[in-house]
Structures are given as structure tokens and as C-alpha cells.
Image 1 (tube, rainbow, N blue to C red):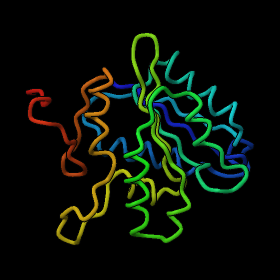
Image 2 (cartoon, rainbow, N blue to C red; image 1 turned 180 degrees about the vertical axis):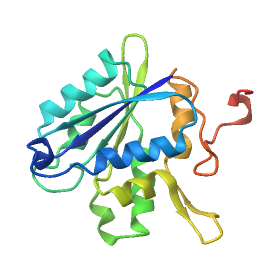
Image 3 (cartoon, rainbow, N blue to C red; image 1 turned 60 degrees about the horizontal axis):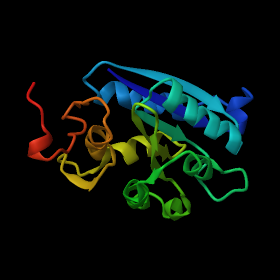
Length: 195
């Protein structure tokens, strides 16, 4: 079973002044796309780097999450500090994820260039965790994970989720299978396990 951390970063949501929509959007996508058993640990924190880093470390180190997804706090505003807090707990940067997230979002809004989303690997004592920052808007979350398809269902721009299961394989995590009607996980033939 894969354990997944979902962290919403928002001053207002952490104070109860704003309904968290990002975390539930991530969980909804995971329910649609994952076919294996999984469990989630969902939390909300303020835009404070020490709090964000502490929760990421707790999810990875103590709870054993193989994949941790954040939403919110990736723009250029003074309180947007999620990428810095994420980088502070990592051993390896995974720049391809951030590059692709911006490519997808640029198909929809020109302000996607302002996004500073990152993905990293945190190495723990007995496992590793993939940590990635997603956008804050529910529609953008799904577009980023799933990619862009034409009216016939053909992929125009690949989403980032297709690479996540193999990345989790490579860092020693559980083998994750997907609902291929939503997103087919890419693995080299040598890495595909028979059912």
C-alpha cells in the first residue's frame, strides 16, 4: 500500500477563514487514478517555511509517505515560500517536474511563468519520498497531473503524473498502478511487473 501526504499551504485556510479546495482536489484525482490500495495523510499549514518543512519531514520520516504533494504558496508573493521550504528538506532536486508543470499551465494562462513549483527527493532512514509542489487551483491541479488532451482523447501535453509511479519505483517505494483511462503510468518494459 502506498501512503501519500497531501499538504495545503495557506494562511487563510489554516486559520479557518477559507475553505481548502486544493487538498480535496488532489485527493479526488488520486481516487480516480490509483487502482491500488492507498491511504492519505492530509494537513493544512500557514505560509511559514519552518511549519511547511516540519510537516514535510514528519510525513516522510515518521509516517513513511512515499509521495508528498503540496498545493499553494508557489508564486512570487512575499508569503509564497513553499518551494524554499521544500528545498530545505531534500537531498535531490527533480527539475523536470517543475519544468513540465509550467509547460502544461502555460497552455492555459500566461501567468504560469510566475510559478516556482519544484519537486525533490527526501532520503529517510529506510525509504525515500518524492515531494512535489502543485498549483493551488483545483482545475490547475488536475491539468498539471493529467496533462492536456484534444477532443478525441489524444495527449497534446503530457501530465506529470505519468512519470510519478516509475519515479517512486526508482527511489524504492511501492509499485503503483493506475487507471489507464485517466493516466497511463510510463515505465520502461523492463520495469513493468505482471499482474
